[in-house]
Amino acid sequence: MNPRFSIFAWAALFVSSAAALPDQSVSSSRQFTVVCEQRDARIRTTTYCEEIKSAFLNVLGMEDLWKFPIVVSIRNSPGPVRPAASVRMFEADVGLKIDVDINLAGDLSGVHLGQELLRALILEMAYREHGAMRQGAEYADAPSWLVEGMARYLETRDSGADASVYRSLIESNRLPSFADFLAETPAGMDSTSLDLYDACALSLVQLLIDLPDGRVRLASYIRALPAGGDAASGLIRGFPMLGSSTDGLEKWWTLGIARLSASDRYEGLSAEETEQRLATALVLKMGNTGNGVDTKDFRLEDFKAFMKNPRRRSAIFQMNEKLVRLSTQANALFRPVIAEYQQVALDLLRGKTKDVPGRLEALSTYREMIATRMTEIGDYLNWFEATQMHTSSNSFDGYVKTANELSAPPAGRDDAISRYMAALQAQTE
Image 1 (cartoon, rainbow, N blue to C red):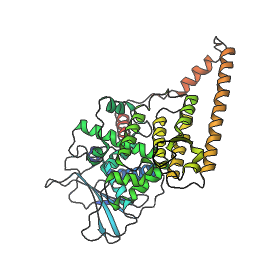
Image 2 (cartoon, rainbow, N blue to C red; image 1 turned 30 degrees about the horizontal axis):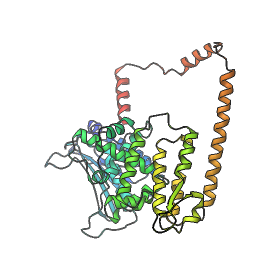
Image 3 (cartoon, helix red, strand yellow; image 1 turned 180 degrees about the vertical axis):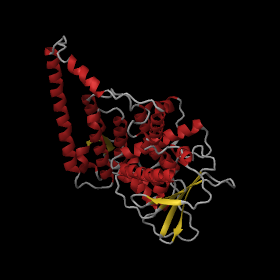
Image 4 (cartoon, helix red, strand yellow; image 1 turned 120 degrees about the horizontal axis):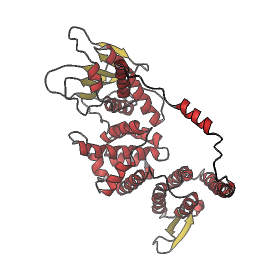
């Protein structure tokens, strides 16, 4: 399943038949109705719609609770110049309905059916609880960064994003400001600019999902789209751990890009180094008095002692920035720990302290367990290095050879039909 599957693959299957009325097929969930004259293209599109929706819901951790139908029309209608692909929402007899229109007679360059389906799914989810629209009212379209970023995320979630793309952004100093990026749209961009936009969109979706409760919060952000407002404010409302200002968003995004740029570097901090830096990051510095001249160090466990301090918000935000920075290099064992500390910090900002002592105690216990296990592993490795065999017995050479032969893929056929089926399968994966 590839959300960036070019519409040319469907165009190759489509056969115009002006004499016949368009046929239609309904998808397994019954949300999608695909209208297309060519049977093979119609059936494949119906299956593809469900694959895209399943992947989209999986990213958000949601069940399929659709309310409004989506009609996908694939046609070949030469005539006046009009967009080759469009997504529209309008009132119907049963409520709102969303149309995805693909005209194979138009300019199909840059048109990806998966992205258009994601745009429609985001619209349906956003307006699911808003009922009928006032006559003449405009609806909030799905943000371009979210559509592009989600498509790229679905495309790379198995293999992972290419970290070199983010390194090139940082090294070439081409990373746009966060506000400028949110205001951009990919329409009319050249290939180089579009690649840059796609990389930034993917990074934003990836970073939001990686936040504590990121998938749930991203779903809530989508549902809040009809409320309007600028994109930065919407993100701050949906993800309060990012800070309370656009400057905080800018810092978070820059640090996040840096983390993604190092995602293919397998050697990060050791567990011991991560523990040392984490202990330092969890110390909050804030003034004892309102003037802030005299400062005092507070451990996070001492939150009851500083909850009434007027400078606690600033100190907690600074601690959160340190945790984000540490997460770019932290040992893998500590990443869920750091994410939970970020969630605790968010709860303290909201004044929710009821469960904090128990959570902090559990985190402390887990950190002690990691330290103990790493010490035991180190001792074992030292023992093994001192006692292991320094020469190979070659006792298992026959077994290894047989296992390799059995695991080797069978030789592929090279006839014309096999080549065609292999090419068709590669297009739809």
